[in-house]
Image (cartoon, rainbow, N blue to C red; front, side):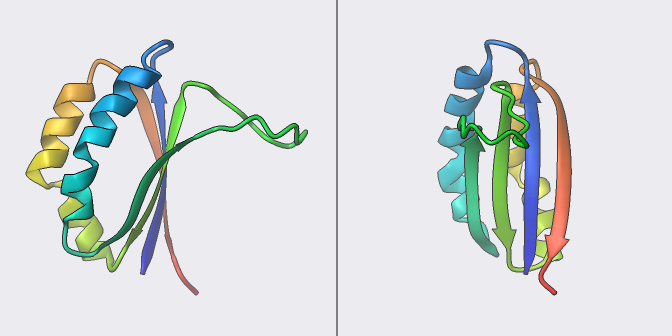
Amino acid sequence: MIHVVASIKVKEGKRDAFLDIFKSNLPSVHAEAGCIAYQPTVDVHSGFSSQLSDPDVVTVLETWASLEHLKAHLNAPHMLAYREETQGMVLGTDLKVLQNI
C-alpha cells in the first residue's frame, strides 16, 4: 500500500476556485483502479504552537494499492486535464510518497 501527502501551494485568493476544480475531478479519481482514498484537506486553526498553517495550501491525503496504481493516476487523462485547468492557480507541489512498514 502506498500513501501520498501532496501539499499544493495555490496563489493567494485562488484556493476556493482551485478546490472547485479539484472536487469536480474527485469522482474520476475515486473510480480509478487501485484508489483506496483520495481527499483534499485544508488547515484548521488548532492553537497548537508547533502547527505550521497556511491558508493557501491544499493538502491531499491519498492511499493507493500500489506504486504502479499511483503512477497510472498521475498520467490519467482526467489528471492531465485537471493540471491544465489549474495551471495558472498553482505555485508548486511538494509530495511525500510513503509505504507501510
